[in-house]
Amino acid sequence: MHHAPVVVHRIFPSGGRRVTLRTPGIGEAHLGLARSDEDVIALLRQAGLPDPDDVVLGDVPLLEWEADAPHVYQVDPPTADLP
Image (tube, rainbow, N blue to C red):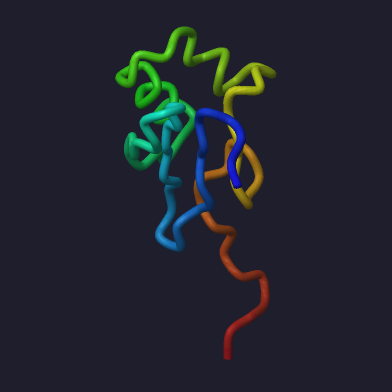
């Protein structure tokens, strides 16, 4: 269950993360796919959030990074040698 209004979801295997905005009484809106912090900032700006730079890069509790490390948008390639 998500508590923050902005959720940056887990990394897709092909890279990038889905970004959603939760609005009380309305529900969740899919804002788009982000492949960088700059993409998340642009999506939040388009959605009308004030100070999207502070939301993504600051310590503002409006954003939740789901499952994977914050600010990471690509899956690490396997480190083991493949046969």
